[in-house]
Amino acid sequence: MCGICGELRFDGASPDTAVIRRMSAKLSRRGPDHEGVIGDGPLAFGHRRLAIIDLSASADQPMVDKELRLALVFNGTIYNYKELRAELAEMGYAFFSEGDSEVILKAYHAWGEKCVERFYGMFAFAVWDMRHATLFLARDRFGIKPLYYALDGASLRFASSVQALLAAGGIDASLDPVALHHYFTLHAVVPAPRTILNGVKKLPPATVMKLDAMGQLSQRTYWSLDATRPAHALSEQDWLRATRAVLARAVERHRLAADVPVGVLLSGGLDSSLLVGLLADHVDDLLTFSVGFEDVGEGAEKADEFEFSDQVAERFHTRHHKFLIPNAEVLKRLPEAVLNMAEPMVGQDAIAFYLLGERVSKEVKVVLSGQGADEVFGGYFWYPRMEDAAGAPLDRFSSHYFDRDHAEYLETVTPAYHVPDVTSELVARELAKPRADTFLDQVLRFDATTLIVDDPVKRVDNMTMAWGLEARVPFLDHELVELAAKMPPQLRLKEGGKFPLKAIARGLIPDAVIDRPKGYFPVPALKYVRADFLEFMRDILRSDACVKRGLFQRPYVEKLLAEPEAHFTRIQGSKLWHMALLELWLQLNVDAA
Image (cartoon, rainbow, N blue to C red; front, side, top):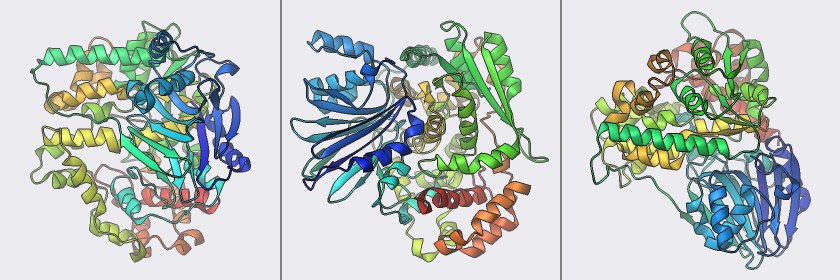
């Protein structure tokens, strides 16, 4: 829901509304239903609205409460807004709208910056306090909604995308070598507050920031994940009953917080199929959507999962939509998808979500998606491999997860971008944080709170919101994640992973879906790089812009181009695609800015 932007000046000047409108224009696809800009002294806000809750003009933004003298721009959904509204009404607050946006304003007035601790949902928002000339920024616990900013001595600018900040001008667009090391080691994950660009930062998940008109800044983390066992041991059945109850409640919250129809992205895997099963009794005429692609030939994975999604759609009598997309369209549309990535994203399902989002947005404004289940419930093949490995936590993690060891990173980029092994330092520090009982607790917590934010969650938000489609992720309901984090890891990894979800799905969805090998939205052409896709990547990596940039070592580029299917990462990504995607993103979004 929506795109937000704004500027707070520290030099006594007022923001240029033309700058705000340039930023807002870059966010137009996130919110096609309404545009608004306001200014108040040193502060200006811009907003693009995707109307989902309270479709009337009274819920348009920027939202100003003249009585409380507060202004808001907000992206996301507060799923428990009705309960909070009732509580605030009992406290004496009167409301002029019916949606969740105004609830944020009243909650901030009532509880100050601690209001975020009461919110169930996904959100990035800014509140301007006119009385005290202070700006308050907040991001949800898992960073489901993006919040980028650029800070210098004269002002702070913020927006829902990097492109919006670049449109404002004056951004240091040079590459951050530390971020590059993270990018090429953690399959494009660059943990907050860094981005690939030196001049753009992002507010970390579960974090609030407060600034005044003099530029004084404070920041704090308001939530963290406890990965220790409960004081009283629970039986397996206790854990399963609790998982079902909390997941069902989360799905219901995500469904009900909308005044428009809600569909489901049905991949044919366990996670999305379970969402359909839990929703089916509560929704008449449930809409489901699946996408498939062309195979690329011998040795590659199957490129669609319709045999499984069809079974689920038939079982629950959903109004199902299937889209089969030829590789020629994938290749043609790749630059368009990359242009809509707030940061470079190498996950091959990014283009799948982009092309699916285009089609789904013609039917609904809101969909539920299964992202987060693998990280929260231990569904990936590398978790048991890490568990079985010997050595220090960092060694066990890196040997099964890092895309490149440090020596190969130094071979990948030119000496100007060489740094120490900063990614190993970051991972070791994160794994060693307190309140995790075992090594797997450390890994699963790190994945759920850091890696997931800048990999699947960011992809889903960017690629669906590019079409004015809001994707909601019930498996990242914070109560569900907190429950899973306290669960013994061996229970989560039982029977190949995600055992609690498999157990509660048994008898609800087809066994064939539960017992099938793990799948995802596959685009084999971005992994098994052949024919036209190889020519496409060769043209990018041999282009004048790439050579002049001086980022990649040419012998390494040519080695990968010579044998594109001989260089996969430990989790089976294409190293060639990682390089080509970054260069294409820079050409489309930075060079052209």
